Amino acid sequence: MARAQRIRVAALCASGLISLGAGWLYMRFIGSDGTNLLDWFRTSLFTLTSFWLVWGGVAGVLGVLAPPKRRLVSAGKPEGMTAILMPIYNEDAAASFSRVAAMNRSLVSLGIADRFHFAILSDTNRMEVAAEEVVWFEQLLQEPMAEGRMYYRRRERNVGKKAGNIEDFISRSGAAYDYALILDADSLMDGATIQAMARRMDEDKRLGLLQTVPEVIHARSMFGRLMQFSAAYLSPFFARGTSLMQGEEGPYWGHNAIVRMQAFAASCGLPVLSGKPPAGGHILSHDYVEAALLSRAGWKVEVDPYLGGSYEEGPENLIEYAKRDRRWCQGNLQHRRLLGAPGLRFWSRFTFVQGIMAYVASPLWLMLLAASILAEAIPGRYWWRDDETGIWVLAVAVAVVLLLPKLLILLRSTLGGRNAGFGGTLRAGASVLAEILVSTLLAPIMLCFQSKAVIEILLGLDGGWPATNRSESRVSLPLAFAASWWVTVAGAGVLAISLVFARDLVPWLIPVALPAILAPLLIAWTSNGSARKPLLFTTTSETAPAPVIVEQQRIYLSWTHQGPVVNEPSVAGVSRVHA
Image 1 (cartoon, one colour):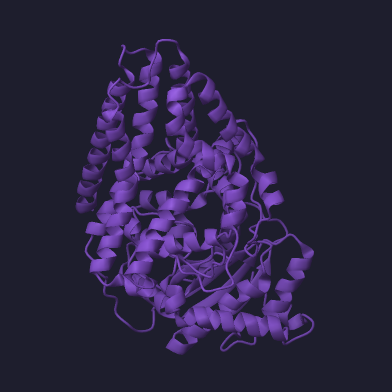
Image 2: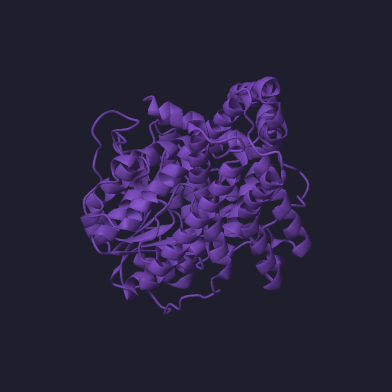
């Protein structure tokens, strides 16, 4: 833990010094004719937002410098009993249940299936989907060793959303198990990974939660494949750096993680915040809070970025991503009410702040943009000195902060021979550059969506917990325009105002305003997939898919093409519903 604290201090100091230096340069360039309150306001915004940019870059650089080590875990059958929990909510039942079937077969092949039970916990409120779940559960019961190990139940009222769903199972049935492996409806894990996680819990009695770093699979659209490539190629290094700083007070992302049942049940009861949503009610981003509560109780919370065999699926277009991001934004902003909770560790509180700033930073950037236009519009004021060299130095420095971690990851992957699984060094390099380009184009659009979400939440508008449409991919241009016309108007408005009142700012605003103006086109374009084999964003899950991925696809296709084995849900199926 002392090592993690030293790394934290070094990372915080580096981020603080770099952002303060950037703020000092910025003040020099905007204060050519003296400074006023508006200049100090702009500099404060720039320094604050720069800190979080630098902080993310520091995590990436630390990950590149981290040694490629793996923790040794003794093989063999786990000692403890594990409940594998899959909460579902109006999902594609055949897809979700086929993932359970694939994981079960993987455990059976290892000879350890008797140490694991599966519980599918439904909060579905659409009756036609609920009927499909019962039918596909009957299909699931035909799987090897399923009898007595597969359970399904559906709640009539989904109180507390996913966290309440898990809490309901733990309060009713948690005493029968030592551990709980918590999944999402789109989660898939290799049996060997599940075995290693359970063995880690056996061997470390202080370990309360172990989080994996899931890899995105089955992406079809450009947007989905970009996220898939980023999660497989870039994210592991950022996770390594984050893991070094977090130590035993690591994150919990709500899925693809195993928890010690006793610790979770005793420590992780969530409060219902006073008042109405979005600020009050049930906590949406429950995972961060549960990790903080485990740490407060003295349990270790760790992330293992080296443990593979953990998969999930992601949104296929920016509209679906923004819908999910809106829920996360509301949940993270609720954490501001928990910052003063008694007994929390410093790092848990910092994690709350980091999660809040992940969304608040977007409207802060817009405020900086508006303040800069206002300052330029004031007669006799200029936003930089006559010598433009300094502002270009600052622009290059910002670009370095954003790009350096990704380029270092590419370099290390090239030197370490890792690129072979991503189509070779040329294709991997081109994919990294394409990821940077497309992400840069989409960034202003996401900035607008996140700013809108923050403003709505502060105005008291509840976004709820909409069901995820995992099968939705292509977005037509009319649909994209309906979802983002206001982004186009905002981008055009900023550019028009700048042309009239702040002409010198226009070259610097075009990289932000133009993608916003073209938002419908970019959303529709990135939602399209290719019938041919894509040249970019190749991942190891495509070049050498894990057996559990192949098995799940085979099971799903055989189920959906042939139909379920049984035609009607039987009384026996209902009797297997677990309390």
